Image (cartoon, rainbow, N blue to C red; front, side, top):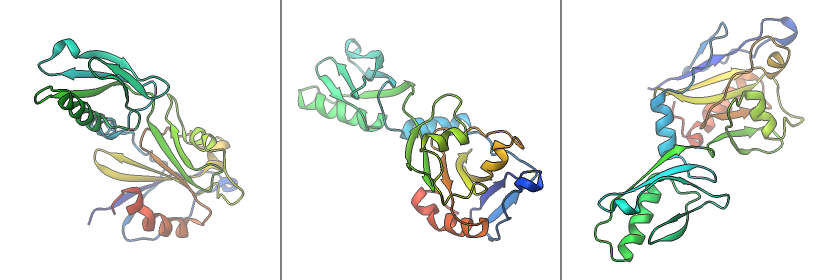
Length: 230
């Protein structure tokens, strides 16, 4: 059975102690402030390939065999549209690159182009997101801007609500294909006991209202909905 690795980020002061160690056979707790590692290059490429296109992303569009139609650099406008020869203005917002390839090929075929082959790739991504859920004022998807950290992600969601447990915040991430999670103490971060950890595109931040043991029971229960498999 695949194991979920949980990194417990613990404070070093009694006034801001870390969360209680969870007891669950599928969870391995690594202590001593071990950091949740960043995504690998392969992880980032996989995220980009499955990410929806959004406003201000920059794309390349290659038409194999019709080089005069290819575009080396197209910026998606604020309304989520691009303009292409033969097709005019296209609404591309919320397509993934493979989905957009199929849509462009479909429209070209409808205009009489035989067996069109299209490749769409991200050149620059402005619209990737982190998910913030749980005891925050505005749960949802928020853009992962340069320098995004855990406290900034929580602030993007309007901050904590009155039921939130500052010591029980989980960050989920895929690193080299391994599903990982880290348990953080926002109070300890605010007091400077350890650094505010970075968050990346496709991370999931869950702020709990439960004590740590109940938190991990809840988390393991909702993992399938978050596409994380224990």
